[in-house]
Length: 135
Image (cartoon, rainbow, N blue to C red; front, side):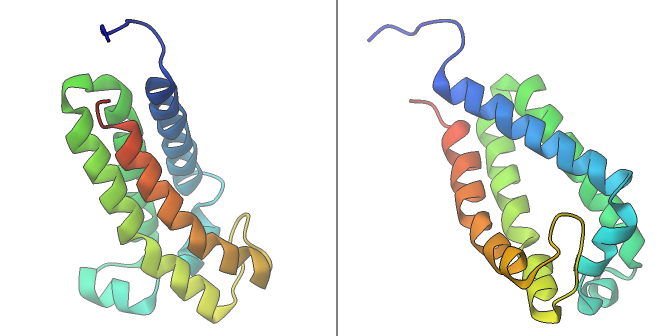
């Protein structure tokens, strides 16, 4: 089957993932910055030798860079996709910490929402992987 130019399901999905990352990163740097500190486990500040705010800012910056990379670096699509998938795995301990402590953060104000959020990581990883692979 010949390669067709234009918008494909995979490229549209990649664009949607980029928008999600850009929105999440912007939230970490602006309106949600204070609230997202709750998600950062105490051990992360010790391991990284920094404070919770720096971790939230860094994760927001990484989300924005990954979102931009998904659309601005088409030749590096697979590598950026692998980095996005790895990022989604890397933030899972924060989601587990938030669920275990029962503390609210922006958009996650109930035990049910915090628990359901844990299961979102698997489809996010799969989405990043699938959207950045060739047919």
